[in-house]
Image 1 (tube, rainbow over the protein chains, first blue to last red):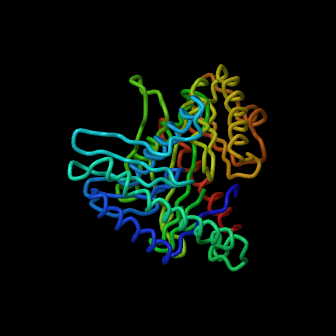
Image 2 (image 1 turned 45 degrees about the horizontal axis):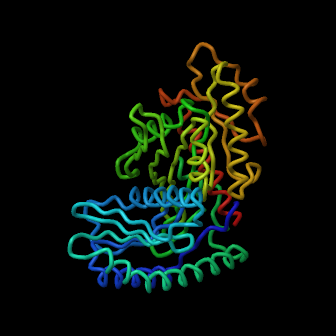
Length: 160
Length: 194
């Protein structure tokens, strides 16, 4: 495997969810999502009725990947935030290292409020994800990894 | 990069279909989408041009089942095949867990296959990967066409490391799931190795 698998434990997931819940309330947002830059949805909080979070996460990651490459072409390292303003719904994406904090909001909120409120959340999420990365590396080195117990039969049974 | 979430008990992996323009990458995904039960798949997203050529990527999430109580989700992506979309291809390879190279078996597409395979090796290296180390499967597509190169000859040109090879006619669904299963199995086996 080229990269260490990212392993999120339950207590870490709950902490991430709690930051997202608070951010969602503080931003008066419809939904707040945490997405990996490769497009994997990590966690969300809010009203996801009618929202396909898996597709949304993949497209958000593609969106940031494209704008980051555009940034490099004009001599910027990265655009730390990406905003899309619609008639009713808008999207704010904050880049936090390997992850994206995505806020979907409507006319009950404003872009200034969202920018302000996500600042603190970004630091908290960043610190939690650093902890996840450290633990994942330790788990990879551990011979007691849960996944070491997966058998050929387990894998074959997926395709039967 | 594989994501394992103990809270939701999910494993998420990323598989990328690579190959020259019009080799059938999107057709592979379309067949998987059409043949899978609604509860096992998400939407098939295609970022395509007006003429249905892939512009950025195609994407579909697929749930294969559970391993030891963990749901296994594969995020399937294709890249745009045309030479001038190289910047997009590099982006899509980020965080990849497994690659399927879809070769076009027609004689006149041999050079395009070789060029695309070199491009894959180069772009993987740019992202810090080595084709020799990652789960990888070779699919020889369009076997139903009259002007195809014999499989042995194609394999001699395109094989890189003794990877599994599948003959396919993606437009009819032949070989599509065999290819997917082979790469998914390699990805899970790698995960077990840690």
